[in-house]
Length: 229
Image 1: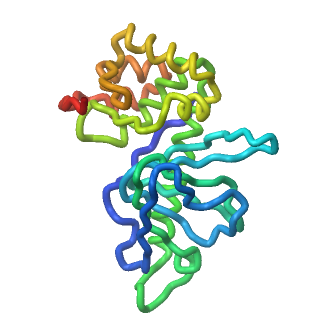
Image 2: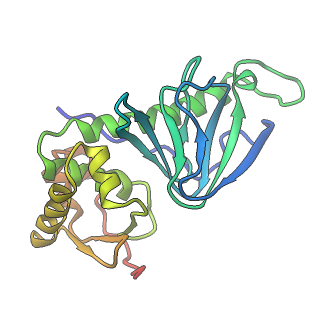
């Protein structure tokens, strides 16, 4: 049985009374490095962020993508990954010390920390769901579904990352990812509009392919279609 994707409310600020700092990053710019002291947690305000690890031979392995409302960098002691902006990105920083202490000036309680932890765990759960699939087609279907359920506006998915990034994250070759996209198009589950836009035509078909029956029942309601091409 595959883990279920959870869908927390990512539209609201985690805790408006906390002292935060907003930072802007350009594509490819590093937000924090692997092994750096983990003294902040981060929330994506807009844009897309990726996390990755670097092997001894210099090979980079992507471990996740984060979109608006997602929390990343919730590591203990030191960051286990590096984080980079995929697009122009704005992130909100939360100091770890404020998350663990009550303060009269912030009126902050455990509930605020729990909210942040919940979003961080939801992101981790999302990627466990994706990597729990065996075939390339199942992994790609799960990856697209994980983005689809975050965007309640329409069926058009903006994929700012490259096919190489998707392949790296899923543990596949670029050729396999391209072939899998073509197969999903052939089955009429998706339509590709331009380099970075995918339109979900058959959410139920993607759910069945990914083995996500609960998502099929709860999330695959018809959405209005607005082309981004």
